[in-house]
Image (cartoon, rainbow, N blue to C red; front, side, top):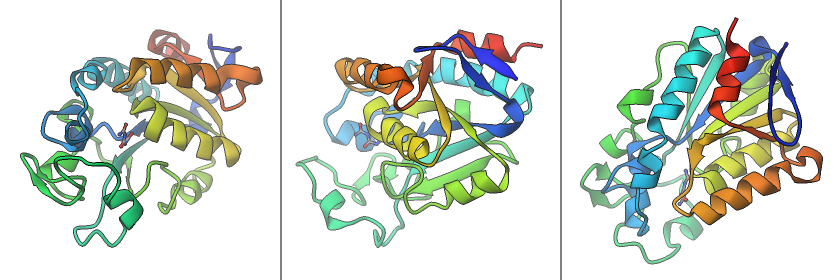
Length: 221
Ligand code: TIU
């Protein structure tokens, strides 16, 4: 059993029953010209966490833990993108439009790939999800159940959108969840801070939060 010094109290987990879930570290959110930028955001804040996410990913792989990568990705015919999502807001490029990295948020396009520093390796699970949460319409819960997973450690982007939605979905399904606070980022620093606070409030109502170096220390033999 491993223990991470976390907020609001010690997070205990067994690597064999825990998956590292990296949410949407794809070019569409982290690089200029993708979906995040099309919504009017400055993507440099998100780019800055890549080295920390990589450090945790390498430590997790070395410890032999299961890794899950997600991508927010739609089918080329957009049949899995409801009008309510497609038509929201007033972006200069919509989902499915052709941008500098190919069609925005469409599976298989260059912009939809996970950034090279965090690319999946054989044996890791890669989930394409049509929603913000990783459990909606993906089969992820069944995959995790089949592997005996009870605990999830989250990183990725953005903190208050896809990461928090996924963590809440996981919490309702009975997983004990830890969010790596410097392995996640938002386009809005105040939303990240609020998310960390609301996750840990009321005795870990959604889960735990800890810095990457506390998690890495807990993995050291
Ligand atoms: N816009 C925003 O903050 N996020 C998303 O649209 N998707 C994810 O968070 N991955």
